[in-house]
Image (cartoon, rainbow, N blue to C red):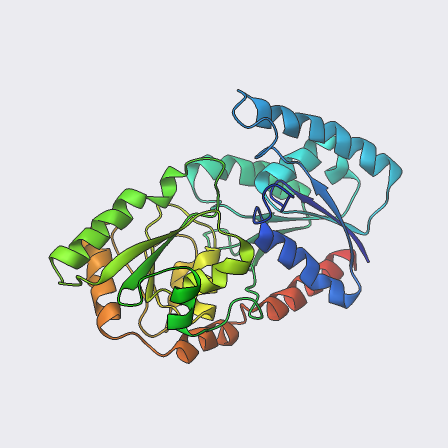
Length: 327
């Protein structure tokens, strides 16, 4: 089975963590005999700082992909974002190939809804990372990214603190932003900082510190997560946040705003909670309960297996989707 994987987010030499979750998901189906070819439109790094530079990269990618498809044949094309789907559509490739798209953003959001409705008719299946009002549509499939439990696993907390130079007497709360190329305001660092201030001043957690994880080498990510007692996701918008799944795999509880599919991820998971409002006050109230009674790591990591969000389970489901489309 030959699959062309079209993406705008993939690791590079200069940024090896860019889209690493996508690379791992793509490679996970190779154990079923899938032969992957990567078509990468790298607008996030090329010409960064030059006005319109990224857009020009994607425009040129339309013609690159058109030429590539004239010279190569695939059983299926998998686009991994709305933007990569548009590149395929404009290249003409969506008209002559079996195609599936993974819509990373929220198709119900105003900014993403138009892309979703434009792309939907041209793809055999549409994979979404959160449940939406479109779930009953014939082509829709709910399938979040899987988590690599060989990489993300519970480790000794004190040893992890020492390995990255943290104070063993402090408890750390994690803030994550995986993108270093631009400031992503939807991650809401201000809301996170407001939550930390309340935890110290209102709830008396004088021993907590913020641990920011942005642009950390992949080999160190697990140590950063295991060094923490809590991950607070304070975003305004997400799809299926990988940091939530990865922290659960590491045995670290999570408190989050109601974004993406966090309700599905944290439902019935001990020590975790989802705020009904997007306020620091409610996040702090939930975080206080968790910090006073941190659940066992095994209960958290076990929830990923129970919900079939480990990499192997998701790979098997993705392979079945490929087979269904190819027929």
